Length: 509
Ligand code: XMP
Image (cartoon, rainbow, N blue to C red; front, side):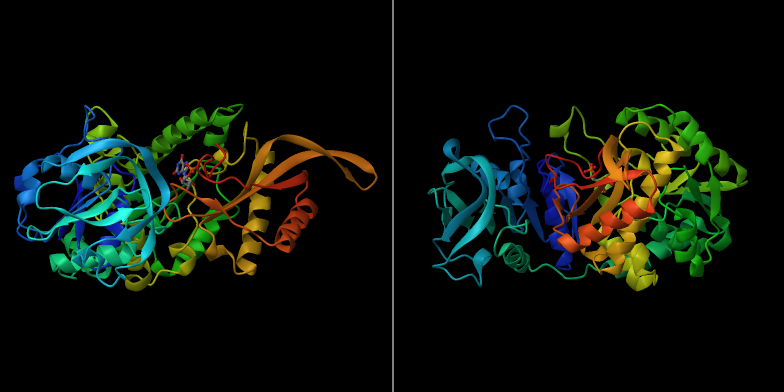
């Protein structure tokens, strides 16, 4: 296995995903993890991540020097390169020629890290740094130089320490995957990781833990909660009770669709219609944070009431994924904290339930593999666009009324159906129609109209941290616009959102 020492980069998870995609097990650990803990018997290599700090900053995430003496290959990335140089006696300095985004680099020396890449070739990499390695540590050699003359890569072959100033883990870096693959070869890493194999381990563990016990969990129809419900159901059968809460902010026929999609798995789902409660509490509320708070709070209340009806329940299943449990490094806050799904915050302790998180070691793409190949779940669930917990409340700008919800639902249904009809749904990561605030003037027949404004959003993204809007043909947008205006009473205009994230977000509130 490969340990990834996290120094606070947003891209650390990308490194882990790439390594796992190559079939090697990896874990992300905070930079201040003790050397004794890092030195596992099955350790085959270490990757030091990037980070937003300079090695000279007061709260700079400096790991122990001994991490570099563990007799396994090391790869430093970005801040990882700078921290290696700093710890081993080189010099790191700020530069006037900072490199952000695409940069060209040229290989200077042969290196196992660049095996298969032509030595004379210049190639494009993705950089994000203001500091550079000005003086190499003793016995190191520069293996690549950037167009600005900075050290783009360095190595000390005898100790198998390698580093790059750029990010091989992002798609914009040419040969990025090959470079990480070369590092795994240098490590002679065992290719034993497969999410499908993890499935067998999870099932064994669940059988032992849940043996005959009664439990509850939430199900929303999204891939995580659906897959975890199907999985636990296969182990516990009728004793597991997934609870589906209709908060009145769901898409058109959501409960019915979830029921139909999961029909063959014979889940013992409890459907609760709590729409009135949520809508009453949301009446007149326009502030996005306030909406989220009310919905979250009400969800916990409804869930608790339902869960209490299941007599003898001893556990609560959650679809928590690996990114939710990675310890954020302390550079982000005053102390290291573990994030959790907040859906049913506080409930397990209050009710004395044991929390069961079968997917806490997995990324979403790995859960999808289990859903598809091990559980035979339908594509419509496995590749379903994400739908936020607060639902349409954050897709209707301003206050929520039954009329607006009805319009947003119908418009969304037309948009999504057309995406499916045109074979576009699975090319897009997330799409929806909602209501922009206010009304606009138009002409309908001979009379002036004053109607609601529908917004369409469709984005493509790998990680939902950055996203680009999808470039539809004019004919597609025209068709959707016409259908919405003609078929949904009360809509006078349709706009398509062409904002990228950042600076915009995917949702509107
Ligand atoms: P944003 O709008 O932050 O969305 O660019 C990124 C992803 O997160 C989802 N999202 C939420 N999911 N509760 C959720 O469960 C929320 O409050 C929430 N806000 C955003 C959003 O749908 C997208 O997939």
